[in-house]
Length: 215
Image (tube, rainbow, N blue to C red; front, side, top):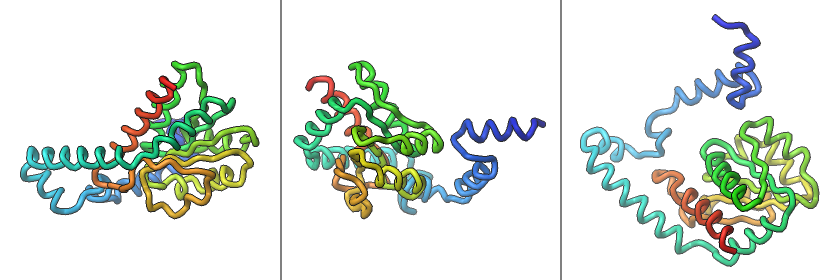
């Protein structure tokens, strides 16, 4: 019981180009199974259903092991060099999609406390606009947990790759094939553990802002 322009504005507010795109994405999500949405295998799903406490204990153990492994794989010298570059570059842009935008917001809001302004687009149009306006002296940071950004925002990813600015990818997917599109890559884990989700990325992001504060 609302007008078509209202529906259109609502769709764009959520980051979609049109209501049709919103409908397509909603259908795609609705068609996904619980196994796909939560990156779970069938035994884990059965354990969650029948013995929730045991599932949670097992899940916590997996997360703990994954985080410890992630810490041992970090290249601390490369991270410090990246943070120095971040500090020295006047215009810094962050790109990402889905959960990675939450990590982008953590970087953006925390760095503001240390008088470092970074620009983050929180929908497709904003990020495309940022990519179109990159200059040689800018720094473009793409945060992509699994590498999905490159496939979901291909036009933006191509513009970043084709620009003359310095581009850096932050990911946990050490097996990602498209790393050649970037000038450098920071891996926040050496194991793309889909079932434990983005915990190593969250840990790494929190480390980045805290390390930046003390350098």
